[in-house]
Length: 215
Image (cartoon, rainbow, N blue to C red; front, top):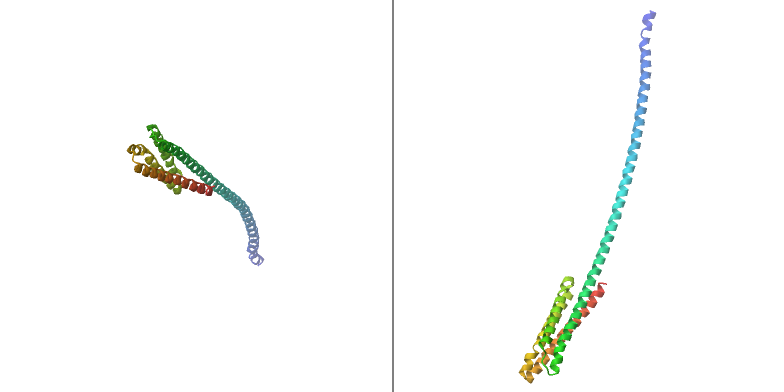
């Protein structure tokens, strides 16, 4: 029968049409997704590129800052060493000058002795005052160092103290009128003076060498 024979053909047509329609719809969706993914990938790529640029800029800035910091520290260290050297130089100069003033005061005592006059209290006080100045100025070496100069300053102070003590003894020695004691004390005074002078020269030599090396 025609109606019963044609009935099976209808579903195949529907299936065919439906299948064709479904294929077209899926193809449209896949294309849209691909486009969206491409757009997102572009945005992500741009973001990654921006992050990379920012990271590179930050790293570059950090390196520049580190280089600047090292340069400043080096300059600061160099300036500090120069400043310490100048302080040492000034301290050594002041100490040598102080010894010069002290030696003049002590030699004034000896001049009186050679003239046959006992030194006055003013002469003795002057020598002691100059010794106190030398001790105070010599103490400044402990602030600046190095240990070698501190040691030389200590040796100069001790030698100057002995020199001043020997000079201070002259009035008592002269009062004895003992030629032997006068001769012996003269030798002690000269030996003390030589020790002080050598200590002063040793300090000056060490100062020149140390300051030249630090230049």
